[in-house]
Length: 242
Image 1 (spheres, rainbow, N blue to C red):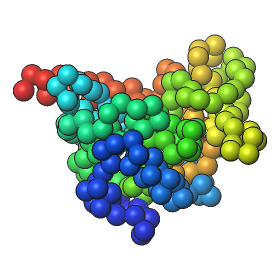
Image 2 (cartoon, rainbow, N blue to C red):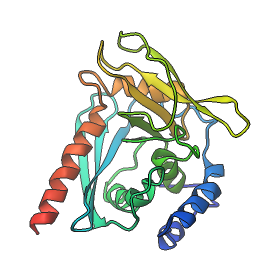
Image 3 (cartoon, helix red, strand yellow):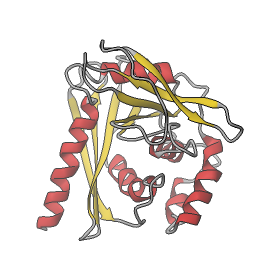
Image 4 (tube, one colour):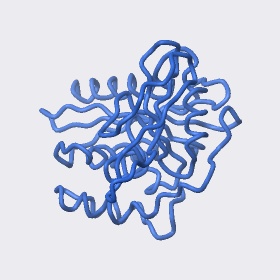
């Protein structure tokens, strides 16, 4: 993982915010490092796509993260890794990345390969401060990232048509009252609820949506996310048992 020369992953993790004010300041500071001008890897080309997800046990103060690497062409699983840590940040809407990223980074670091793309179950630019989990993780690691969420956060949209691949803009207001396109509402299966795709880091929205369609040959949610969700739940169950 190679991030922006101005960003030190180790330093960021060593000084991880523990309260809302510190987290908001970190988002404001790091948001300028998001790279939106890069197109990102070609969908379906040779390489590795990694899905990440987390599961919590707040009573035991545990969070389990999973990273599942798939062949970018065949979507066959080629490697898996998990990590279990302590929940180090309270639940605050818009700041979930501060609960998840340290353990997700740990899981990613246990993979024996560098992802060509990371798919997050959450938001990138489709976030009130334009810095959701996918953008935050991308800036810290330097990896191309996208967010594919099951539900919108604060954005507005019109439902796209019912055919697979149809889409509509995901809109959010700016400080000066304008509408900004922060993502896309994408139908991944015919007449099934859409998903909400946004750029994280080092990829454009067209490529992010094309990857999402490639990763959803049979189900609404990307195969990467489905596999990571199942794996992190197993890891959490094992941590509870231990």
